[in-house]
Image (cartoon, rainbow, N blue to C red):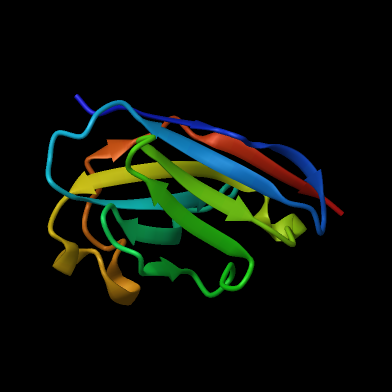
Length: 129
């Protein structure tokens, strides 16, 4: 069973930076669609950024484009989310997710539409103004 464990959340002032990490316990498939999602209090979960495990191209929500960077280090079995120029509206619980699938179904603006099989427990990010 693949397990994901996030870390790196915390409290930061507006304009600051944080890097989230998501450690993957093992890879049981040839490739994964991997991504970060977040959930604001009282709202539905939304996609933040996605990437295919062996690819370079990444996909971002408009609200974080230019400020966040997703990356994957297969050797370390870790997914990252570098968050810069944080805003109070970035305050949310952040979740990483992974799903075994082909690259063709993890591309473009619809990368997040299919269900993800594996989820982390979440890490809280709070941005103070």
